[in-house]
Image (tube, rainbow, N blue to C red):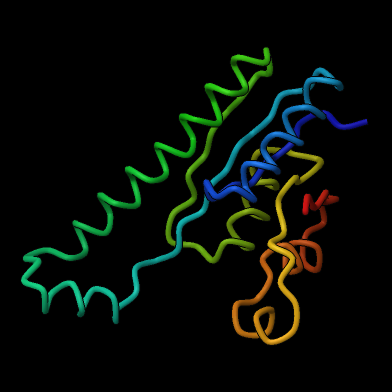
Length: 148
């Protein structure tokens, strides 16, 4: 059925549910996973704020924070996969819109299923904050399993 599953997580409780569900599916099917976390490019407004707070190199500081957060998320996912006997590769996609990074990772890694969470936003929140899950469903050529 599936030969390689991509699991997208940003380290939140919702992303954890997708990771748990994707791992269970991969274990049942005896297939490897790729866990991806995507971080967006730095915001000029945020960097300006950091500079006003006397941060001498806000871009370097941002990159360090992004690297540390990504490593934490991916290490946790790899440890969880290992404890369940699931072969796991990790990938940190930087400077990308989350949906675009997820779709690109699935394509590059030859994944035939994307597992990710949806925050279940509705109404104005969904309009203002968008839905990465909806964007992946709309634009991906790879099937997606959305965990609520």
